[in-house]
Length: 270
Ligand SMILES: [Zn+2]
Image (cartoon, rainbow, N blue to C red):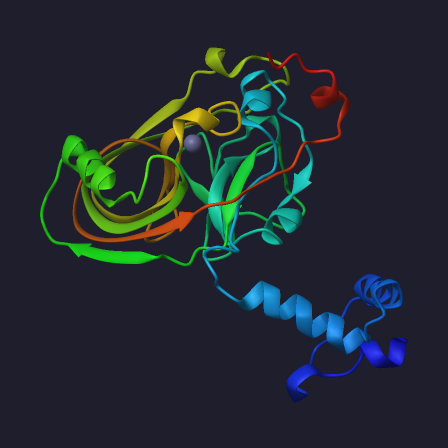
């Protein structure tokens, strides 16, 4: 079986880890398929950008984070199996997270952004494979109220998820990030650090969440910001912007992970 797994689909060079090779061999045994068939099927599913097949993946319910479950031990490596785009935070609430084009950035309480390694852990994250259904270019200055109106117009519905990416020039933007916390301190008691920038290019990335899903994910718009030079960022509070390229992806599915940690299993969520 190990020989079969080292076949090279499409003639290209593919190397599987020993662990993955074992899983493929086991799956082949269970499913009565060859290892090649399994690798082909898995890749096909991963690579096709069918919006109906895409999901918003949540590593934990938002309510658990609100109640101070700050250590849920999902690794960035795990997250990347579910998306290349999204947002969240890190264990101990150590800054805001943004995932953009497959790279995860930690937007720290000092206002600086850093790429993080795959072994870093998150208690709450929300990701998807970003493939916009529509892309609009808008060349006019708008303040925060105008920006929110624009988003409202572009959302396909209030009742499904949308992933939103905006690349733009910001004449003004105010963001915040959160300082590292002890577990169990309710998020409402955490004082964020606020940062303001003028005349900066950057990207907003995040989601629209239907209001009835509020215990799982914060409802309405949730967007994180990263500057073009990838050095600064945070959770969007206010902005004025121009020269927007705005991609919106309608997402009709939610994939919810419920953590299996003592903290989560014993949390009083209602
Ligand atoms: Zn946020």
